[in-house]
Length: 424
Image 1 (tube, rainbow, N blue to C red):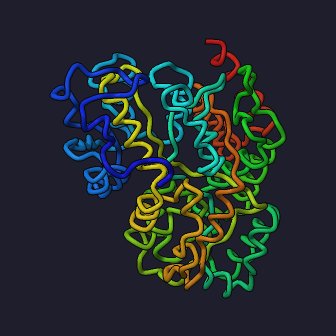
Image 2: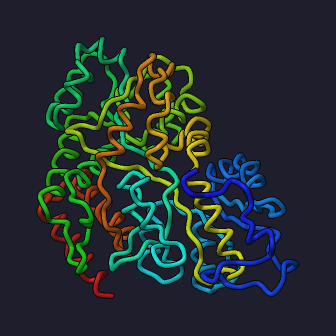
């Protein structure tokens, strides 16, 4: 399927390789293990794909090296910089794909013998584009993405006399609806205003446009989208509509369990988190929609890459593994069904699974909403200083909310600091 044999290639079985791959001296030297470094839950997705790999490459064991999310990416950063303890394949979260795109530690998959560009049309455009280097080349293949969604408590909205469309129409109507919800039910609109800020500053970006910096490292944080993000966040805080609790904290989880927050903004995978362990007792009370003002924003995603300095003799196997994980409709669908890993492979988007009702969402067919979002998201260029810029903008938002700093002054200060940092 998709031009990839599901059995071991005759050339590999004979201990030979095409001229485009590093030659092996003899069949006995053929690699017997392929190492893949990953983080949760990607590691579990890979393990469940092991039978398919054994059928495809008999005699080549799959070694999954699993670490917690932060430890994994720290280890991969170190391995790429030192060329020590490199895996044959590494899984990367999308933000790290952007960071590594500025270095030379990963193979360019658009070059021979990979030629990933020939496969581009098979994936969601947003996902593929996220792995494109600023000056050309592709450093990773997309495995899954997280289409953004708004989850809302249907029971709270009903008690407040608020229609779902009131939340979706615009950020102004979202805030106005939050006022009615707070006044009539006592529930907060959102856990923390930073969630709103993160969406507004990303809404309306053109394909390939940077979030904080343009292609020439010019700082963009005084653009109208930042001003508006700060204004909406300040308005929500002034009206006391956010619970002022951080996502994934104990207070956040308790608020979701007890109906203290009427909406939650995040990736589509959040439904699985809520239903499985955060707030399973709230099953049937939630519904999903697009983000306010149709802000098609992505929340995370996993990719596979091949380190440039990894074992030359495993390159062909590494590429075969990546093709299997990203181009096999059955494996992509299994990851979606088992781990809420929204598939990047367009061939899976017609699976009947998308039309199945979700009991946690009151029987709503929400996967169709997320499919539409996935197809309408656009990739943003990732600058090497994006993580630092996240911290700077977050700090300046706190200055506005907690210390009364004016928005123009806050963004001007952020601009100056980021301009100094970008010159390093």
